[in-house]
Length: 103
Length: 315
Image (cartoon, rainbow over all chains, first blue to last red; front, side, top):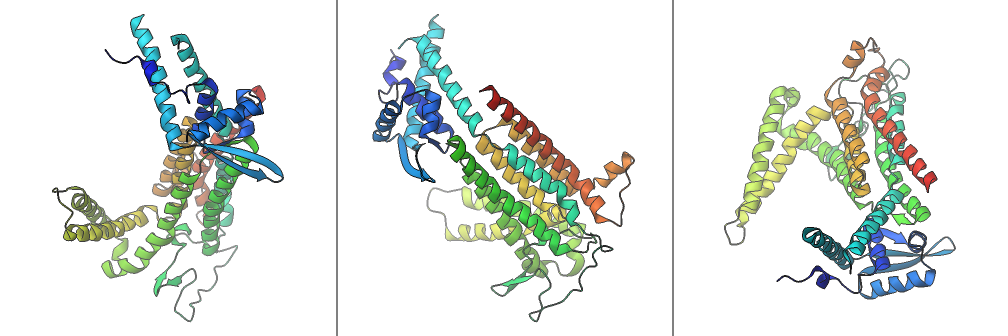
């Protein structure tokens, strides 16, 4: 018997907001902290914690800089991050497809 | 995890992705700017009656205006940006510099626009593909074509024979043979390392293929609108980085219009609709050829700008 699709879920990635961060970052070259905060409707601290978890897992690169005098933080998805996102999406699709086949 | 939450999560992620893509879209401005610059180009083509062409002065090194010496080789880098063969105008160098400026400053401005927009919106579009496409196209038009036309072809096709139909078709055949030979020499492998003679054969094949395709390219696109093809390549690259179906359609339509401007004399179409182009004024002929490519970009850019504005008002 084949493994249940949920066996392929990665604990670091399989969290709604972290998946959303990876999805948005994978759509662009890099994305700014404020953009993520506004779109995901998260507090600064909460978003910062999610980004730290993803960066420590090697799924995101974080760049800190300035735009004039304003500090800006940009995040960029790594190739490992793109792979992890693709695997997670494939697992979620397999889960949905399995349910549709059973019903 | 329940199936409903998996489906809901996939739906949410698709929405985040679509929104980020929508937010980073900025192709409307390059389309509009290039469209306006192409439409304005006929103004640069000054008829000899208004602007008598300067008396050709050969420098002490024997160089004509627009020619330079690189490692002892004489080339005319802006040849493919010029007004084209057989077009009488008063300021050929002015036309060359105009198109060179449109391509170089236009592409640099496009990259700058995306960077500025990234700082403002917070999501950055990767522009590397546009820079790469533009650089390769520029290298081909500024370096490879003038070098081959100015140097190697003199040895192969002396005199006016180069401009004949026979030279064109021989070049097409030579290109097909050289490209096929190079492919076979490089890709068919017998297990062990590639023998040196096959690498040498492939190198000769690349040079011969490049030379023959240059003759074909000059014959087909040497009528003064080659920069449009370079812009086509750059706009197809913009469509790829934007991942936008609409931008891809506009870039494809522009490419078709650019090929038409290069390969067909659009004056004929104007004539059929009752518009007679003044043959003594190069502006009319140039305008007839550039109107369609410019219109495609201006209409496409206008629709994209309107839809971007509508989307931002909704949010």
